[in-house]
Image 1 (tube, one colour):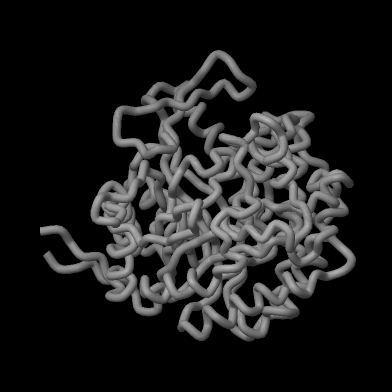
Image 2 (tube, helix red, strand yellow):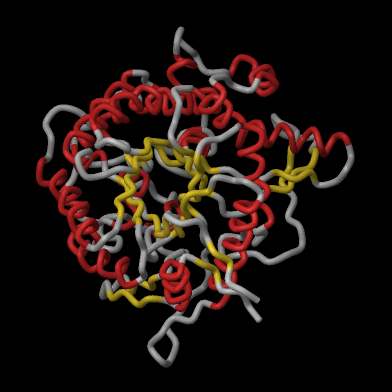
Length: 446
């Protein structure tokens, strides 16, 4: 069987987030995730991001890993409180210079920087003023984006405004399992609106301040939704779930409106919207980033505000209890292309957690992760053959890291990290992906 060749110019790499890997706690301001970690019982084992992977001090070592893995791009996020410890006002130039050095190191290694401006670590000082519920935070974000773009825009071509606004809004403000730990659905929807509004307001500014040919977009966490059966009530429940998870963010960004069926269902909880907000949110993007880890299987429930329940089908599951279902990512990519006439797409996160250990030979053998990547990349290739303009794939993640409320109890990295010594050990999955990255193709199994 011949190898599956990807298009010329395809971007291959890995993704990380500032709070999850950087450490360097004393060299930045407080974030809502620092506060959340200090809240007893919110994070497994009371873990914090104070040290994490110490990437702030070891970034050159990690860039060397990327080069050894044949990556031609690297997605990382900027820590807002490292640049602006109070969220606004005086710039921490030492922190901003760190990202400038990282960009230069990547470029020297032949690796394209792919920046995310916001990956959930809002400065605590802004949270005390209401955080993302406060519309003023939208404008503070735009100020922050301007500072970063002025510093790095001459060298960085790929920019993501926000990572997964659904997670920041719903898990952080409705379900309370992420920072800041609130549990108010109406406020969560207002947060989501303000995140999208800040994205739209930042787009023209970023175009102005970045080099010619720069590509700007946003990353959404999306899952293909399947009804648990062919019963009408299950099909309708799946549509509602898809509306809350996928369409509530896809529609404003790509169509300029919230989905009316979900808007009507939400009733009094809908966000407050000022004139022109939707036009701003619908500002054209150059690409859409998609984070995908699994599918969703949904059935009707007589209980709960949305009358939906998640179904756990028989199958293969990761350490996060997420189903391995590569068909889902293909269906999702095709769906977004066909239903939305989407611009270029990038898989900006895709990966899996397993119980990795160091073997007697000193290596980390992770055959399940290798198989996961092989199957999901095959599904991505199939989507391309069906006309999807998929331009890149970024595996989650470069390193084992702080996995939010799970602390250090889950390992997603293609590089094993011994947190006591900070030793990095490339796993078998890194070796597999490095060959894919090098050859721009997926080897077929005999």
